[in-house]
Image (cartoon, rainbow, N blue to C red; front, top):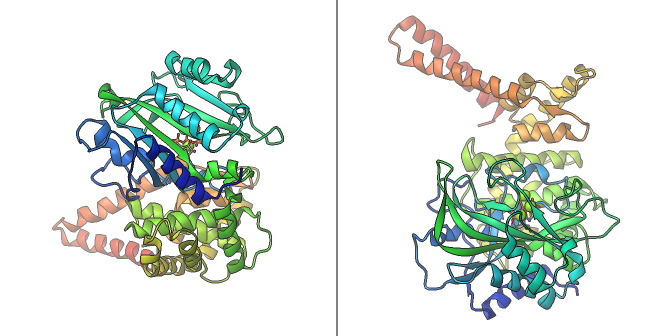
Length: 470
Ligand code: ATP
Ligand code: MG
Ligand code: MG
Ligand code: MG
């Protein structure tokens, strides 16, 4: 049964509403009052304090379509974009939540009811996982729902730590967490990949669509797990992933919304091959960048702003790969606002700001991008048989040409090169030490030293100004 992305979003919220859930609006991508979190990365973020028992709401069941960004921070998918069929930097997470109301049994029945009852997915296409020792969840799947044992996988602690496995969900290093049960859709034997828990699970045949987390603990900064006052439920289903299933396509990038966005991008860049990887990257990145700016993030050299800058620069570089001669990225904002403005009116309200910000950022970066790429190519030739880009080269690209480290890694990845991250970090440390020395001189009243240091300091800022990486 074909359903559009908007129809699925609506059907999901209606289904859970009809089961007593309050429909709550998506929160901002910039988490309120949560310094532990870079960006909103899951539907549960806005309910963190409710799970912790610190905040009480008038409802004990909620459902949302939450905008999320997973770039930087604990769940970082920036490097996956362009390489897998299922990852975005920005995506929408559909979720249902129980705050001390229902637990494992109802959560599993609700999810199954939506997938097989409302969406009418064939049960045999679905494989589920449970946390290794979670017999309760196993039995619900097996005995109540009737999923055969061969399609229930127990996922264990793969890193030796008590809760380090994939089936123990944590929003960050601290906060609410618990064992989870995930639902995978089998896209068919012609696609490489194996079921969850197998050696080929990283392939894109079995794609995880829904994660049901049984919130039981709060992890504190000392690494301790404390039982939550009331066991709760948090679930997350990627809207784009379930849309791919419902639209009979394998990749998220082939769904209705992305098809339109990609064809608009192709038109702006005069590209004819719509399956081109760089087009996908750009279409992905225009969403995260636009939504981040709409939520108040601006490009800068640190924190959230630097993540935004990294994404913009990555998009600009992929535009270059497709032959863009001039600034292009901001031209996609209008198309995005057309496609998603009904669900997210802020894209329309902030359209001008988003366009101006992206245009300025791109104009700055293209002044150094080509020179940086030339330098990188020269370095690749000089490397001979080695497949590692030395740290000082990565550093120079970063410092002089404004190449974020992940951008350099992305440029060379397809040719089989990796970057020496340790070496880069050493160069960064050296630079910090130099900066510290320079500032130490500033407060030193020895005039001779002061002159030396200020000369040196001007040198750095001049370099920065010239190359416009600030
Ligand atoms: P994966 O293993 O595929 O990276 P995940 O286990 O990291 O996914 P969860 O943290 O469990 O994902 O998030 C809940 C759901 O959100 C996933 O089941 C998936 O449908 C969706 N999702 C997660 N990350 C992304 C992403 N980067 N892009 C699109 N959808 C995503
Ligand atoms: Mg992931
Ligand atoms: Mg997963
Ligand atoms: Mg998961």
